[in-house]
Amino acid sequence: MKTRLYIDNCCFNRPYDDQTVLNVHLEAEAKLFIQNEILKNNFELAWSFMMDYEIMSNPFYDRQFAFMKWKNRAVVDIDPEEGILIQAKEFRKMNVKEKDALHIACALKAQCVYFLTTDRKILNKDISAIQIMNPLDFIRQFYAGDEL
Image 1 (cartoon, helix red, strand yellow):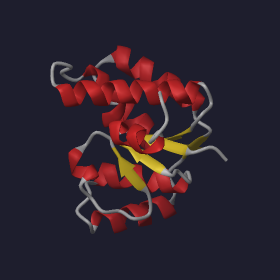
Image 2 (cartoon, rainbow, N blue to C red; image 1 turned 120 degrees about the horizontal axis):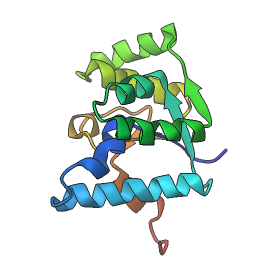
Image 3 (cartoon, one colour; image 1 turned 180 degrees about the vertical axis):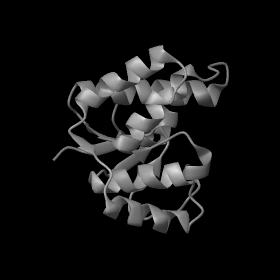
Image 4 (cartoon, helix red, strand yellow; image 1 turned 30 degrees about the horizontal axis):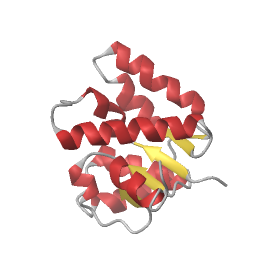
């Protein structure tokens, strides 16, 4: 099985954030690189009902359309179920916001190795069940020693 990734909504939106901020620009480029690697079948993408919910809540229809195209690339699409809610409640005890807890629970259900986000509040949580990283750190770790 290829390395399976869950890319959260913050990460999908990164290219639309203020690109004059170096950190934001680098994370956006890293996210685009990772998406290209998914297109080349070097990674698997996981999707969930939470992605559907957050993307369809985006007030920018062009972004909704662009992001939802990635759903077709996903190898798994997680539907809501009681086990996800139970897992999310455990993450809530760690002061993870409700939506974020559901995303992480979905990523675990999808058997993802990495949860990619640009949300600092999630990145600062110590959740041992999955590797939570921003896209730039993911590339640094995954391609350590490789020439890109």
